[in-house]
Length: 281
Image (cartoon, rainbow, N blue to C red; front, side, top):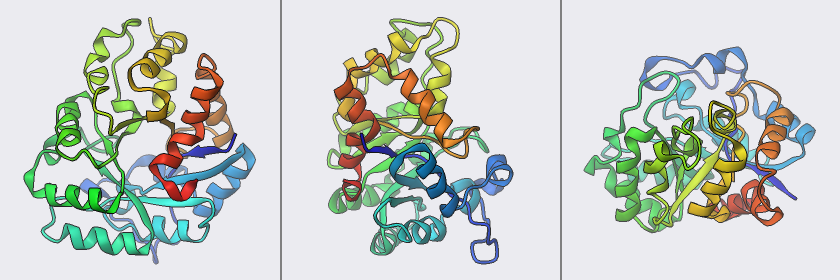
């Protein structure tokens, strides 16, 4: 199996060339405490047996400046592609997206909140962003959305309005699953299943949550496969944001998904990523 990771991050050790300018004005702790350069990521991938990766820009380090993720990934074109961030409400957003795409950007990400700010999904249904969404459909660029349950109605609206755009929910949309099977508290997530352009990204957060209270990997992940299908699910390490080596993070994910069949796991750990980012195929 050619394992592909669709959610590692890279941080440069050259702050003069790539100065931090975090989104919302607060830099994430992880990016200072355990940064990983592109060279360190490649070494970690080699050690873990990860073949390729879609590297996600660190908005909490660099804001909307995608220089390092693009230039870093371009050093390893056979193994990495870059996923960046832009100001979706900028009047010139389409020109900005085209310019980054010309430099090699393979997808985008919207960061509505997380480690440095509470979630605010208001950007998602702001009509000023719709021209950028139209362009993503034209260019065939997927987009990741970092939000919680509060933003899922907006995600559903966007999926319906822009059916040509593949939308990837970071961290599986952070569902509440401690209630256990049949996971009634996560119904807003499962309600997205009929929207076939929405994809699920499985990261360490969910592999931790399935070990809490009444939840379990053996009941939750088959439920997600039943709803969305493994062809709409992909693994992301969140390395080095999540603690531990890439090898350990991958091993935890593999153990969590041992309840799935071989073909489903092949999609989650590689084949879905190749559909989202064709240059990784």
